[in-house]
Image 1 (cartoon, rainbow, N blue to C red):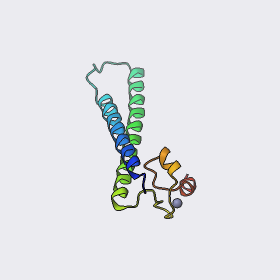
Image 2: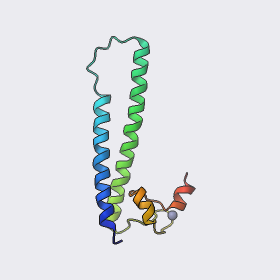
Image 3: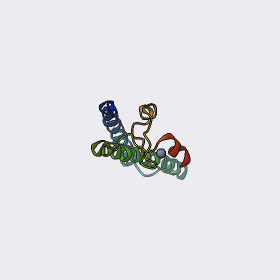
Length: 111
Ligand SMILES: [Zn+2]
């Protein structure tokens, strides 16, 4: 694919962005230096926040994994090819989701 370099840069930027996000979230979750004498409601809120942050962190890590997989497919020459059916993934789709492993048809099927 001629435009692969363009997507590679996007992937690297994306990975940077999400790694920063993960770092910030994890720093937040582990930032437990405040006194523990909070009332129960506050503790519950804190725990809910942590759940949300953990979910966000997990989501971001998932994306980083997908980005890494896409970068790997670039090396093996499989980038832009659906891992499910072998069809070419449209550039329009890669513009939006540069780490897409599935063509739009297969992505819709798995939803
Ligand atoms: Zn497909």
